[in-house]
Amino acid sequence: MDKKSRILLITIIIATLFSIGVLYRKTMILHDFNITEHDSGVPEVE
Amino acid sequence: MLETVQTIGKEICQWYDAPYFLFSGNVFSNLIYYSHIFPAIAALLIGCLIYFSNRKALINKVLFFTMIAFVLWALIDLMLWATERVDLIMFAWSSLAYIEPLIYIGVLYVVHIFVKKSDMSFKGKFLLALGLIPIIVLAPTAYNLTGFDFTNCDREAFEGPLWNYIYILECIIVIIIAIIGLHGSQDKDRVSQNRLITIGSILFLVSLSLGNIVGSFSENWSIAQYGLFGMPVFIVFLSYLVIRYQRFNTKVFATQILSGSLAILVLSLLLIQDIQLIRLIVVFTFALTIAFGYLLNISVIKEHKQKTEIEDLAKNLEQSNENLEHANDKLKSVDKLKTEFLSLASHQLRSPLTAIKGYSSMLIEGSFGKLNEKISEPVKRIYTSAQGLVSIVEDLLNVSKIEQGGMKYEFQDIDLTPIVKNLFNEMQIPAQSKNIVFTLDMNEQDKCIVSADSTKIKQVFLNLTDNSIKYTPEKGTITVSLKRVDGTVEFAVKDNGVGISPETRAKLFEKFSRGEGGKLNTGGSGLGLYLARQIAIAHKGDVVIESEGLGKGSIFKVVLPAIN
Image 1 (cartoon, rainbow over the protein chains, first blue to last red):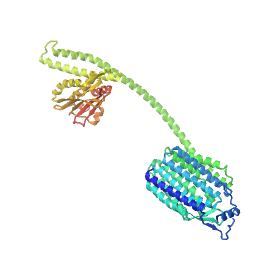
Image 2: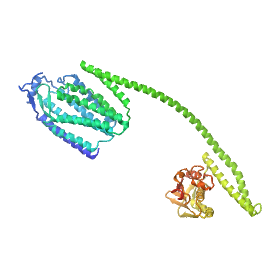
Image 3: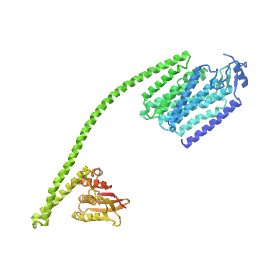
Image 4: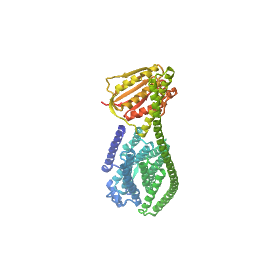
């Protein structure tokens, strides 16, 4: 692999890992996601 | 809030715990397991098989990476079916935004390498990376999943605008794959292979994602599972293409893939209980059996035809070989007879010629009384002609000795300097008779000692010098030289005579070849150069001819290994 391609790949990998880290913190640690409830607060059972 | 949802989910929606992430009562059908686990195992095994078959090949590395991405996708998707944890659903579903485009990019890269037979340009890689940037930036945001859908018990997430971008990107990649595969190569021999890998790749990606896209818009996720059915077939399809693409036979490959697919489909019936699904698999199996049977039938007929043709060809070849063998035997015996005749005739000719030469010489010397002027001239001509004939007979005898392997050499370490000096003195008279400027270029300080048969090597030098005098017109120039050049000794005769064309030069060392000089009617047998070269080769040297063309003179060199 030439030098430029290697730099590009490493950059993408680092950016992706950082992004996954932020996602993990948001969902698994902070539980920062919008839970959409049913109007009455209780879900309908199908 | 999260804890409330989890509690309600378990109590009302009857969400089961999934302690091992992948297995729980939340999965509504075994079809889900079949459509995820089986392709994942197949992809992992085949990816490893490809990678370890040749770790250095770029296409193998890329395909292995693509298979790993697919395995991750399958496991995460299965986790989404099985788990009851909302946070895990949100994290895993969001992660698919990274993985799914990577599978598409991996397949595109594989097709590119296969069709173009080279790595993608940096520009192409950069464009693909640009396409990933919105995903990397927006995946942790609400543009990916806008929220968790708790309006029912289905444990789903709401996909945001990022997913629309991902689906559009995937469609663009499929179009690029089609363009590269169908129009990306000028190599006519690989058209069928390129088409196959394009079709296989597109079907792989379609069966991966069409179900998800349809499920995403219709919210009927069961549809997605049928698409995954085709995964193992296309994984094997692509992988086999990549492994065997250098020795590729379309029909053999298609037959092998069909038989593999049939085996997979029949085996899968053991794992399925749903009658509708069984019917679907039976239909697929029937269609593949028909296709397989047709291909096999054609193949067998063709093979039989080819076998018959090969047998006929083999018989003809055997007959031809026999005929060639007979002809070869005849040629050998004729060649032997020719050599024996040459030797016998030369011996028979030599005796009377020697007598003619001897007696004419004695007459000239006055052994039988003084000759008057009228008789003297004709007798001198008889002597000269006899001498010429004896020389030709000697050459013929030497040729026959060389051909029979009977030429004997007496090798000794000799100094070529006095030999060349004597030769130069001997040839002064013939040169002067044509008013040729005849010079010697030699440094007596050079040690020109070689291992040679002095008689034979002098004969070679004499031959070349004599030729030069014959083929140089009146008032021409000839230079005889002897030099030590690194580890060799070079004897050269340089003239400004008739010269040699490149076409003639190649033939001069053949027997009875006279070159352009044959037109000068200089006499000779045409064997001098042939003999000179054979003798030089026997002395571990060679004879070299240099000439710029007709009318530009020539240089004849004898190169021999020197002794220090």
